[in-house]
Image 1: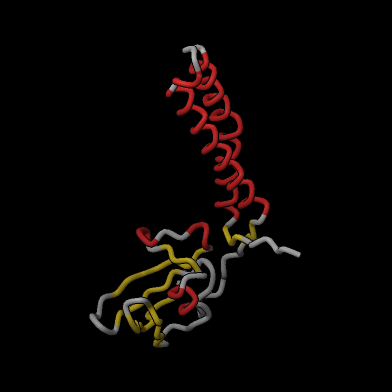
Image 2: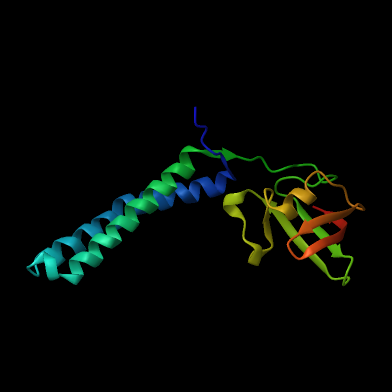
Length: 157
């Protein structure tokens, strides 16, 4: 039988999704219904671009609602690791690039919370997987599309 994927996320992220779903199902659904009602009042629906746009918006909205419902139903809450001797979920890891000597700190998060621009890396990404369960002082090699990357793990918080 088909097995649903589980989406790793924190309790906080699950709460954000539930809040967004509530907003979409209450406020946005009513707003879009009102747009459709107004567009219908303009007359002939075959040449009514406002109606077409409102119906398209409704389709996007229902698609977004279904997506969020799926995420919530298949959420797997991850517990932030309390230990700081090994990299785990919620760890902040400071690394040094062996190629150029630059240092960077990343937070290891679930896939639903990843945001590379904010240095939040998914544990499912090649980089995140390469860091998981490692200790400070270790050197890691990560096979990336740009080639082999090597880093020293300087600190784990």
